[in-house]
Image (tube, rainbow, N blue to C red; front, side, top):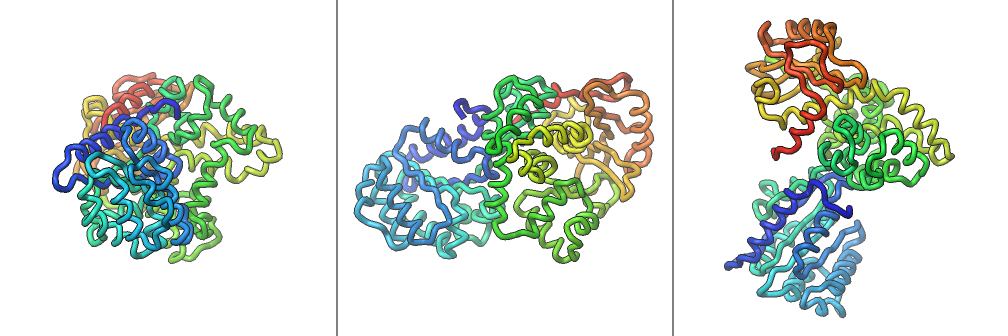
Amino acid sequence: MVVFIGRDEQLRLLDRQLDVVRTGGARPGRALLVRGRRRVGKSRLIEEFIERAGVPHVYFTASKQPPAEELRLFAAEVAASDLPGAATFAAVTPSTWEAALNLLATAIPPDAPSILVIDELPYLTGDDDAFEGTLQKVFDRVLARHPVLLIGVGSDLAMMEALNAYGRPFHQRAGEMVVPPLSPLEVQAMLDLEPADAFDAYLVTGGLPLICDEWPRGLSLWEYLEEALAHSTSALLVSAERALAAEFPTEAQARRVLSTIGAGERTFSTIGQRAGGLQQASLNRSLTQLKDKRVVAADTPLSTRPSRETRYRVADPYLRFWLSFLGPHLAEVERGRGDRVLARIQASWTSWRGRAIEPVIRESLVRLPAEDRGGADGVVGGYWTRTNDPEIDLVIADREPVAKRIDAVGSIKWLEDEPFDSSDLGALVTHRGRLPGAAADTPLLVVSRNGSAVSGPTVLGPEQLLAGWRRRR
């Protein structure tokens, strides 16, 4: 990205880490583990930080090569870097990571800050059982005594979290930073769209910088889709497939389950049936894997009564859009029939968006202060029964998964030309009466794309929702 939008917080955190390194002391070295889902802009963020920092550095990206080849590539990267002792690696290829990292300590400046980046760190830790222990030992004994900032970057969220977990060699030796996608507010700023249109763009792009980069500023959703679907190599089309190929290179069953959820199935039984009649144990394994990788989210009803009515959804808005409309029809785009794909999207857009926007709105509400949502504080969820009677879009409560107190009950109406009206209000009041823990005086909350034709409930629109993303969590 030419302009960094919405990355100020992450850059400030990186700057603070480097400031600690600059301050010195007996052990000035610091380590930071940076995680975020694939194609979210982690590497570009680190590159921007390095450019602004202006200190000697080496940036190595692991690539799932055999250990000897990874070491050769690492040595070549150090030799080509601007570290003062880079020439040390010009005529030597260490045979072990311990030797490579110890030799690196002789190449970095002893009295000035430097940066060492190991990108795709999980490739090294996953393929070499000894790598974590080696990195911990050399960091403790050697690197931490130098003014160096060691940054490990990875897209496997579960594995990156585990690296710093109790019982692992690197436990409590590194800080952690999550690089999120661009928020709806940042998408709006980047694409110069109206608030409501920014949410549509977020549902399509998922806030992935690479896709937003190819969306010309001010272009409408349908103009952009027409343009993107005319090119089979557009970021909109290829980003998901590449991420899935890297995330699930051999797990065909997990991919099948994910595709079934992306197609709209939400319950355990229907997912198993539509994914090829999977047995319960097999389906459980796939769902656990998908949840561990943060690809699928499992939601439960929020009320004062426990419930086992779990619903599954694709966690990433872009991947959900891709699985629904693009992935199954890539062959049409390759044949030059992107117009057919576009027509299919247009025909289903209103109903698909109505469901897809719900978790985004809930996250937006979480970020708003209580006074901006009718005084209701606490967690935000929804409520449903097995028969979806009732199905309530918004429930604000004091805690989850089982609340002690219901603070507000709400409805989402996300249509361009229809405001929230008296019939919608009547349905909401009826549903409130059937929500465990709600009372006749429990406040009502309405989120509407096109305003409200009735008075009484607190009403929020796209502008108010975007405001929530200005606050840090």
